[in-house]
Image 1: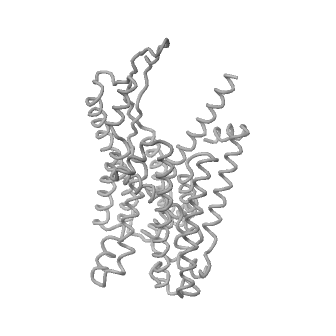
Image 2: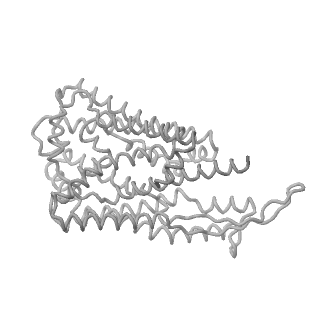
Image 3: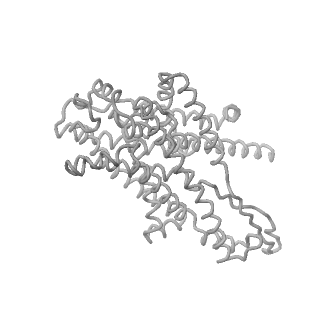
Length: 429
């Protein structure tokens, strides 16, 4: 990876793109540590340092430590990520969006505009919930100090608008990185959020006993190696294109393949499931004493068996659902038949679609199981150790490792692709 970056910095236009990306990432981190107006920074820091692990650590990780600190970019990339996932689901369920998706660049631009509107709506909902919890003292339970200097209606409205505006700026920064920088903008910003809090968790490891720290580091390195191995694994379906005459020229006759990854769904099922399971925590104070106590006891603790079971089942179910809507075997088979392509030994058309669906289902099963086990590992470690301090210091969560490894590999691949493209252009010249 270091060699690829050094080679990229030697190319003038790639160096500009990398510096532009790094500048926007630095601006993003500045917004995440900048407090919002009306927030008592001293009280927030004291309460965050004494907060329990579990969902608080999850909120800290997915927001880069910004949500619980009520900063300007407190919402991070989660509103845009959630809106993108919802729009992908609606693109399959709503005929109008499905027609737009098939129109090409014009239709995709329209869907992107709808995604922005939905991002603003979700940001408004999330910011209102966070500010309401901060006003009532339920954002960080166990903290006696008020987090806001003024909990009046006008001050709360200003705080909500600041967070919503911050989410819009984050969305703009992500799109700028995608258009003018290197890699996928939102993925890089999410990678930045996770990496920002990771060194702090690593530093806390050494507070433990030396044996526990060594075991945790070795287990983390093994987990990273396993994630890299699975993320690179793919099933290559061979495709042969028949020769055909167009005018006086002969086209076709080439061989290629369809790369089907083992983890075709990526990190999306884990993120979406984590967002869904955070809703009971937010709704518990509104359900009354008995129902709220049951939810707080069974659906907010990462070490509870019911929480673990629901977590894994939702990840597996959503992995199957997300793969089914992002890869359409009928559409792929129809495109292959249209351009004279076929899988050797399989008839074009409906037989090819059935074969691709069969291969995809066989790949999705281990991929979904891999995501479930990866997300369950830290929860099982918490339950076995039964040590709140160790739970807070456990840095190798499944979602965090998957985000860091997946985004890192994808960004390096894009840099290598651009380097190869420029080498080919120089060779042709």
